[in-house]
Image 1: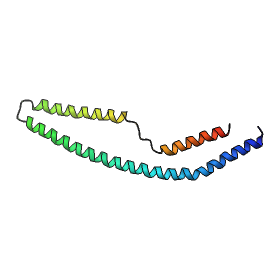
Image 2 (image 1 turned 45 degrees about the vertical axis):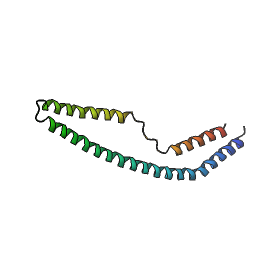
Image 3 (image 1 turned 90 degrees about the horizontal axis):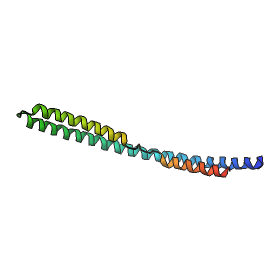
Image 4 (image 1 turned 30 degrees about the vertical axis):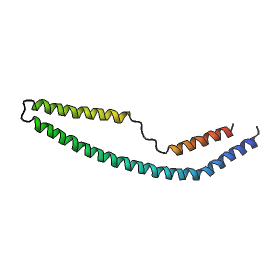
Length: 124
């Protein structure tokens, strides 16, 4: 293969990528807006869930403690509630650690990967 044909192929690949730069820019802005909206929606939902859950569990614990106040099992009930909270924290931690992280900018990543594959095939 001659140097001229290699230069022509590299030039074609370079033009291809220069034309795609505008598309990449548009994809970045679109995916950034989508990621921002998804993040805001998830954060708001998680905060609402956390606040509501904490109030519900706190008042449930207070009700159980108030019920057990006049019984001889008050200390055991208090420790059982504390143990349940610790267990809930451990389970929550394990669930958070086991979740797959969100994939932001996956469309842009897939487009760039496909373009790189096409460029490799064109340069063979």
